[in-house]
Length: 210
Image: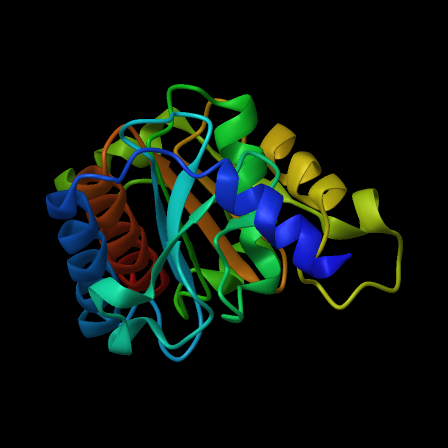
């Protein structure tokens, strides 16, 4: 059955993505690692340029090690296209459900950004305190996974249902904090998503020090 599904998925593969976009996605992984937004965990994706219902995301691996051959295509439900036995991120549904319900979003970053995490569990709001984080003025939401998955989850977005709940919590905000977990950052371009992810972390650090 698994082989049949892989064959069907392979047949549904989109025309090849722009190689330049794949290179940009590799660079995004490396930049986010270099800036301390991601470590051995976390991921960044990009909406497919020839099929907007699909998206590009690395196979399951440390972001700092991603190369162009690690970039995979996924459909709107988070299924890998032409998986070839490669491991995929458990939390790919963060990306699939946001792309499905937010057509304006072209890139998504999920991280466990250290300075950001406390703002998901305190009553102090994450708000812009310098010019490079002015995008936070549009609002930052908080996703409480217990409201969607019950009191005994492992905090991971393992299912489309949890991904959909996170997408609803995000709403029109550029950032959603995930209580006790991390955050998700969205934007209308990959460069903007990386910028926002980096400066969300910087802003959180500065706000905590203020």
